[in-house]
Length: 309
Image 1: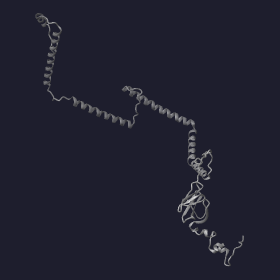
Image 2 (image 1 turned 120 degrees about the vertical axis):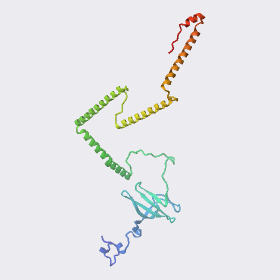
Image 3 (image 1 turned 45 degrees about the vertical axis):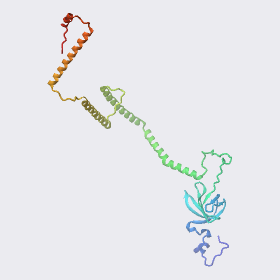
Image 4 (image 1 turned 30 degrees about the vertical axis):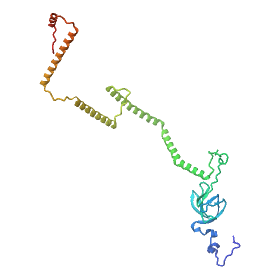
């Protein structure tokens, strides 16, 4: 299609220059592209909400338009995030507003503050609005995409390997039930034989030492044998210590007495005991009986003889 109402200079070559803008050395967007080398494009931006300027503290209403510096600052998944830097028309301050694709809204990042215009029905004499469809699908398509992506990753990394492992176990256990049952029964018989032998040995030990039948004996392993040896040695030490203490308590203070002196002291002690016994017997007999005449007592005294040891 040919261009109309455009002046083409005589030295213009379409194959060489490509376009009139390239021939004149200008951008198609004109002065809006003066900072395009910095990644900034001058665009017309309209305020999406009411704000207060952070420099002059003046109110700026929603819908006011500015020549904003538009710049791409990042991505949310595949959606670009843009910032719009505007100069306040009431002062020389600058403020910046960015897009928020995650929440589908705009956010004031610097130089101003947004007016909070969330209407609360309870504060204004109304009734609170509750979500009666909590189980419904999310309205936000990005949230739905995130949930579906998380569910897919969980299914791929967790659920599928778990199902495969369960299927392998089921196939291994149900491939040949007869051989598996035969193996389990053989293992059970071996365990039962070992258990019976142990019970028989425990019964012999209980009968030997008269232990109660309900007593459970510990299995003989290295740990139990070592513990029993330690307890045995500890008990022997305590017994030897107790016997030494008793010997020190009941040991006579005098030195060793010869055998001859020991026999003489024994005979003296026995004679002394006989004399004291004779005196007690005579005193008791005299106290209980009435005192006889002299002749009777003399005659009876002849027959009373007390033999000493």
